Image (cartoon, rainbow, N blue to C red; front, top):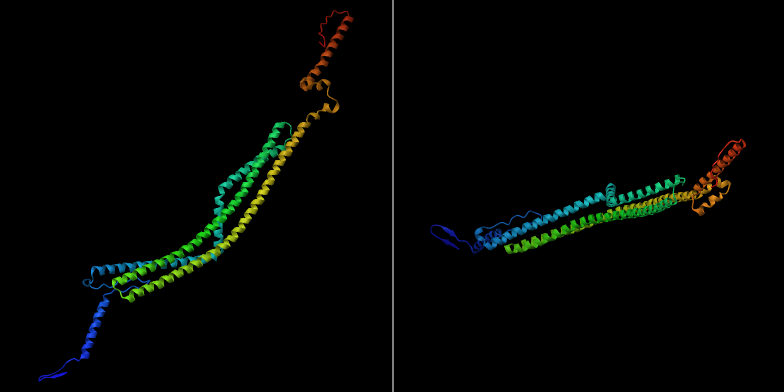
Length: 394
């Protein structure tokens, strides 16, 4: 409309212009309202605090909801970061395993570590058995030397019998110790394989532990993301914001969980392959140990049997020499024993004593004969002579 006056011409706005003005004003009001709602932080980035509108426009309940949302966003962020660090640790450990499995020196180092552990486990018991064996063999060797050098004279039958019995007992004890040493070698080989299995289980367990840790932390981060979604809805966030944050968290956590599983399985396969090679080498060493122990046991048993045989043969020779000693006298080879010596057994008198008495009788007879001859010579010369000689034969 146009309205004319005498002083000026005034133009009034049209209905279309008024409608446009009202629309602009409404959009401005909507923009202010939107600025009062905090936005959700993106995953793997430090959560920015939601913008707070003027405190005069927030009720205590709204403030509490905003504080809970901030705390939930922080917890979600920290858990995602922790899961990411665990995944990096798993990747680093896998890289280290790859390096070790390609190194022959590392494999030999692990094998030596296992062998030394098994050897230490039986060290004290082996030392005791070795000392016992050496003591038995030393005593047995002393008896063998005694009966190989002595002629037999001066040893009674009882002492010879006791020495032979002692030698047999020493030989049996030495053989028992040899068997225990052979069993100890098998025990050491078994301990070596047990330690290998423990180390393999520990290494595979490390891979499995890191994998499960990544997957668990990713799952926990997803739970926290669901909690943040609920808090965002309660705090008045737009549906697109809290649902969008939840979808992003789901994508990220599922990806981390899948990566953790993938790298964990790779690590387990590497460990398994690496320790299979170690197992082959250890089994070969175990067989070698057992064959060497068996050969050493046979050698020691042969040595013990040889020493015992020397004692037994020497003792037999001594007994034969002692039995033949009386028949070796000169008188026995030229003439039979006198009757009075033969009768000594019946009279229970020692032959040496009878021999001494037999030598005295001829002396007494000779003395009597000389006395008679001297008396006869004195009578022939008319010389007084008294002879008071006792009877020679009583």
